[in-house]
Image 1 (cartoon, rainbow, N blue to C red):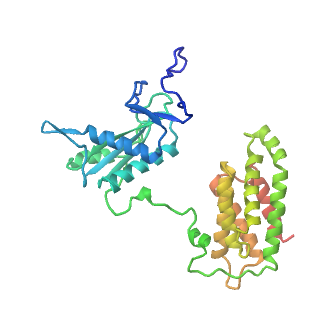
Image 2 (image 1 turned 180 degrees about the horizontal axis):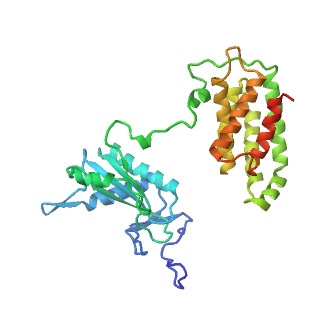
Length: 343
């Protein structure tokens, strides 16, 4: 339906008679009827349906229609956003398409483009175009690989050498975090030289969570005035998640480095928005700093203060703000100052 038009195309309802979400396969960019309507599929199922249609359409070779690609072919895969599909969904679809082409069809997707190349207003959908590259002249490939700053064309993700696709390799946010979280790292954790650390940590966490939950209405009120009104709810979600993990015994209280890593996991699992991301980074940086800067004797209160400093600096670095920018740093920096003073 064209925005503002009196006539509305209601041919495709959001749900069927059973209340299931619906989708249409092969829908034209002007709303032309597609091949069929069906219940909403998973990302992998959609990718399989798209590849089947492309492969069956085929190509003409010596006056005969043959499959578009075959095992061993190098392919360019262009995944097009029709206008209203989120970047998350587009990335998931691209991953499913490439995975099926390489693992099931035996091809190698050496060039992948994902973006909004041909759109239809805010249509929530996607299309895929596949170009076999096997046998193509080198000058054609150089044109495909050329960098561009054209706003309507994304740079190609080229993979020509190596066994692992660079863009498919997961990179840890913080170096060494995997061994900290699993507790299976080769480096032994330094001893904790703080009296009654487990009991103190449990008490501080419990009281902090209780205070944040209680403060939700006030934080929401203030953020409604100066922001989007979700600060109180976001903080409450994080506090409830940490409190639940504290009560269930899943937080490793016996070592601060592992505890900070667990707190980062809890924040990541429960808090959204910028504050959730930055607080997760703060806890992760505090966790790793205790391993890299602590002397051989063990972790002291001074080391904990320095870990907090590292965490606060990470918030400033990744968030791009400083004290006085009217962010969480206006509370974190003064707290850090008091902590470092030893008062």
